[in-house]
Image (cartoon, rainbow, N blue to C red; front, side, top):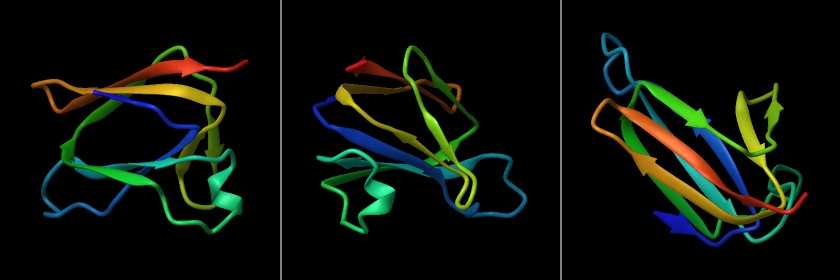
Length: 96
């Protein structure tokens, strides 16, 4: 699915079942860059229950050590696809 957005925060949540090897995760979409500095509520939150791996291609990302989250700024479009192997494929268009 394609999302028109300016920035995104990608994060992992705690496992639903501690014995499960997969994690729930989320992608929060914002209409501004550096949303982690603003404290604003996301425009949209996309949640996934069981993800084993996330592949991010052709995008510049920042890793926030304090929360283990990824921030993607300067977006024009974010493309998110989930496959049958519990993987997310993330790509998009970004202003450089």
